[in-house]
Length: 109
Image 1 (cartoon, rainbow, N blue to C red):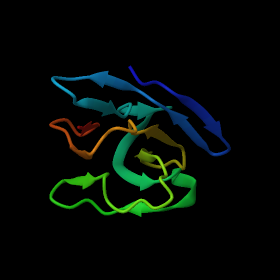
Image 2 (cartoon, helix red, strand yellow):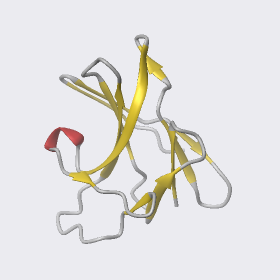
Image 3 (cartoon, helix red, strand yellow):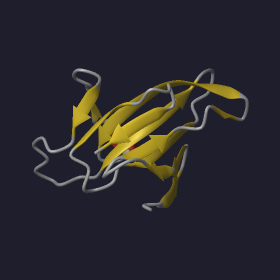
Image 4 (cartoon, rainbow, N blue to C red):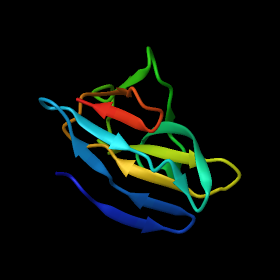
């Protein structure tokens, strides 16, 4: 199981992963933090504080695209009425990630 914790000012980074079938990994955002409900999930090339947000295509992201600096990928969980976020590092061997069946999940292969 891949689990890393990194703490940065104004950005709480936490990895929460649950293995799924085959080589899939389900990354889950907490539904709420300090009573604020999850509002969206984004993916970033490199730490989210660097603001290199990726645009999903067909409900997901290709993590094997050009990445000349070989930066890690992260998903960021954003919450309503707060600037607090949670970032989860995507496993380095993931080749693609897509939205899961639940609003709080990303599935990486």
